[in-house]
Length: 149
Image (tube, rainbow, N blue to C red; front, side, top):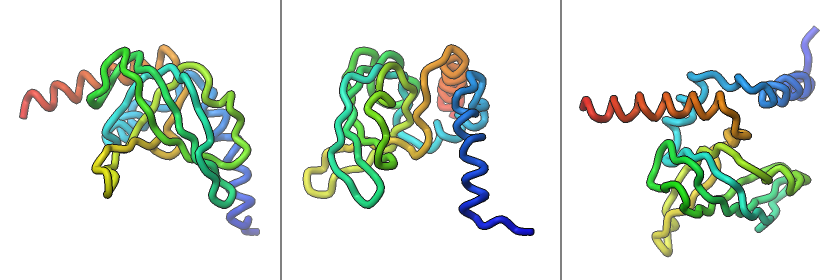
């Protein structure tokens, strides 16, 4: 008996959600993959999040946050950064409270040439000591690799 794709996805969602609540998740290799895919990785404290638009069943949030620790990119501790986060409609504002680890893509606005940051899909994580330790290790390895080139 084959399950339709939507049924299979519904079965997997609770596993993904519970994995995000596990302080040891994600693995070092998972974090390293996301680290390589983006321009900015930072531990931040969110100051403000507001919905800027809706398309279909999705909302676009504009988030302002203070950098607590930088792992990759140009933003240093104490800088305020602004980025966009797409999410399914109905996500509560409280989702954006507190400290998070963000993985940000960058793109240049065609008209203004300004850089705009957006969250890598499914990458924003609550800050935990284990995740911060893993990211410090990844940053250290990336710096060593860059220095040896």
